[in-house]
Length: 73
Image (cartoon, rainbow, N blue to C red; front, side):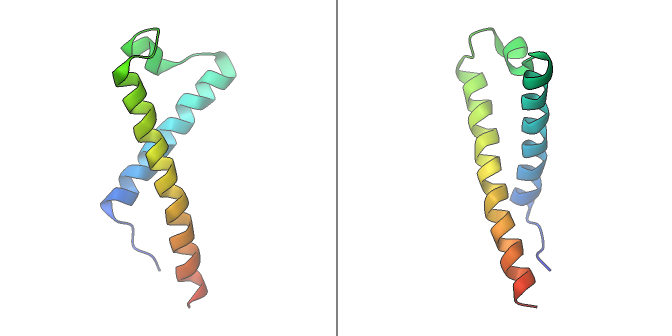
């Protein structure tokens, strides 16, 4: 069984937060990042989106890691 590293745990949390943010944007057109950091997404808002995107990429990598560890047993 694959053991989650601290990076994997943080990425999972950030991915869940990102999914909630995008869900709110899609359902009720409510973007909390724009409300907190300003209407045009400024540098801080863009950095948050980038961090959440990198966390999503890490979750894809984690998916392949766990898939390979399940095959070997």
